[in-house]
Image 1: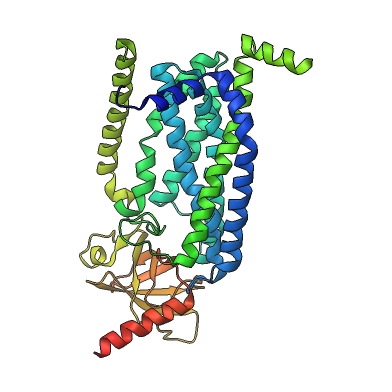
Image 2: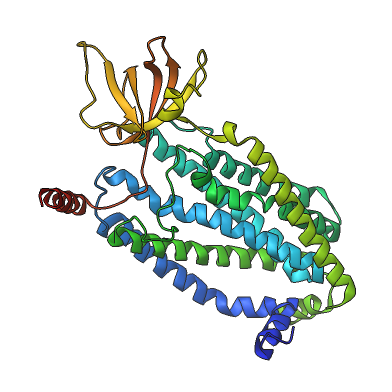
Length: 254
Length: 147
């Protein structure tokens, strides 16, 4: 590990210590909320008001500002959940386990939002609420994976064992992520191909693209805020018998 | 890295790689079934099922949409830019249905080789732009053709 700069290693070790994480996240929370509100305001204003209507879909395309960032987040959060799960398995870092399991309900919500908004858009545009094509089916499987992770974690009382089982389930499910991403390229699907994340120029006009990217960033901050809130609660639950929690409680009661 | 951790890292990597390879093989063998629709070339070449429902995808050829009788029946040609199939459909078409647009139709071939659709879905493309930009692109390509 000598390739990593010393300051990064020190930051990593400090963040991995539960009391430090607990106090540090409390300090940065207001800033995260301010950034999130600003980004969401700018993104929604740009997307719903400033951006022009589409040449074919008219105003209906504006669901893209919720649908696409949600779908991106559903994949991104799954990767965070799997990677922190693996870190928890290999290095036995408590905080990694906490972040992994705290991500699951947020990821499940984003997956659900992506599926519902897609369905609402599909009825007027495609002419159907739902089709069993590769993209839609693999995204539905992602929702089931999230629900499986949440259910499995809840079913096992010993949270150390629960975290390990959940991490393995999450890692097995990682194979679904590239399938979702490339499904529209590998197979014939009703869902359209990638717009923003293709190698050449994105096929979306810049006045529509900027609000989309703002919304994507705002969703990232929302995830961070929700994750930190959940992780703090989960951490307190797990560490309720440890010295630092007792000291903190004693200080608060004075 | 401590030996125990290294072992766990290797074990987990092997697990992920193993699952990926297994899934890769499974998807490869089910490749045909994962295709949501047949292309028009498949249909002309006789690869599509003869007696059962299947989905046909392609682009509506410009100027091919016609209503032969005065009822709801529309007839149009689909293409994948190499071979064409004629489609007949009775019913309401989705908003995005228009000439030059990709669609997916569910139905059967009749003995004459005409595809009788029971359902028509519009396949949206991945392009988003304001109407003015579309107009200027169109003008550009038209002047380009004139030269």
